[in-house]
Image (cartoon, rainbow, N blue to C red; front, side, top):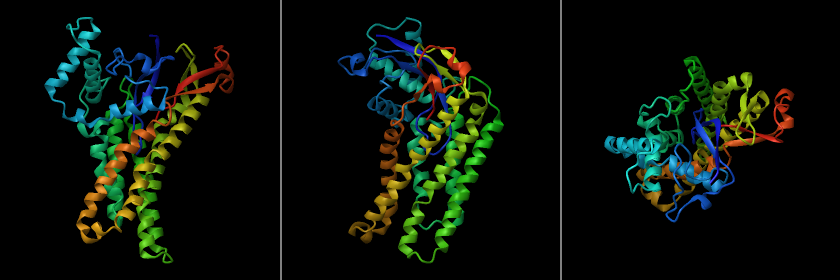
Length: 360
């Protein structure tokens, strides 16, 4: 079973509402999860590597479902320490007899969900990736509430971007010092852009007298999407503009760093920005459409107090199902033809294509 380790950086999965977080990534060679898995469905354990094949959509989808599993929020301190100790025993070759691959993968899942890989400190529960959906769903519900006032629009957009900022910071790459000013700049830019667009669109809709009240209400429900999408783009550009100046590492077929390319950085930034526009779409577009239909049913007409509860369930379902599906659409590691890179970088390798980490 041949695998190669790529010294790349990767973003933490699944932040459709903005921001970048980075983690180490290993990519398997042409070995599928089906070939690797044993009769129990668990492949041979490999420390620090993903359990599921990352070159296929289905493998990435299963990986992100595993990463965002909210059950890890309820792991006790005793269970966490047991998981950490089991991985330490594996690392030093002192595993107790009878330990299975399933137990090892479970231990690694628990540790990675709770402990920051660089600081070895526990991540605050609302800012863990496994807590992103449970703690983010109330914010999505707030963003999509009908008949928003100016104050409520500002509050929910601010809270949304603040939660994103907390997730970004808690899951940051802490191997190298990063100036606080970069984080503050990205946060401020995301908040300002989100609030400005949301407020501006709401004002335009309210002044559009040619719309009927029902049409105006329907349009207002879709306001959060362009606001959040634009804030995501702003956040990506502000947080990662240094990559455009310094370039990002590109690797050959053997995982060796060929050089740092500004052209690859432009591709990575563009791909990430496009991804950030697509990711919030199912979460912020589907619930308004579904609720506009459900509110016409006899149940909600007879019991209007149930509307908020039904709305919350719809948002939770859209968040929980659409998020891993959307993130899984695009591979983490992208390829670019060597001939399209800077001449000085292209001359250093005979590979026709090189790999770079585009982020999420």
